[in-house]
Length: 117
Image (cartoon, rainbow, N blue to C red; front, side, top):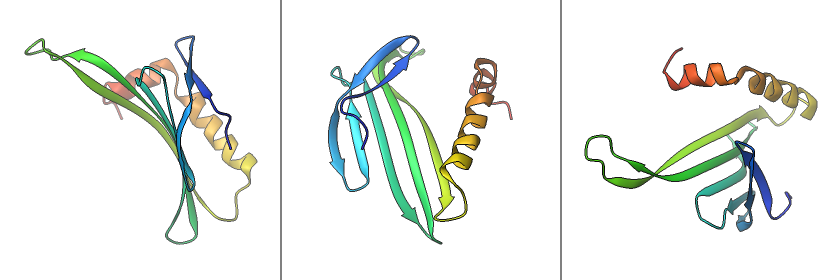
């Protein structure tokens, strides 16, 4: 089980996320201002596979560029590890996660945001 509260750091600012629910193999954490939600879940899938997800959502007030009316919008970023029950060690999974993290430089995230493929 992860520590409660857990935290993430966005742009050098630590955000405390107390656990607000725990159900089966899933836990949800939320910041006091309700602007950040952090989810960790695990689920079996067909064919003896396991799916692990870590997700963070950020809620912010944003203006509509056409009407200039402000409204809440949410941005979600998540990583899913989809693996067979056997065959890959935690170390092998970590190597692949680190490889993906290494690819996600600011330049490459900007390219993804700009819909390059």
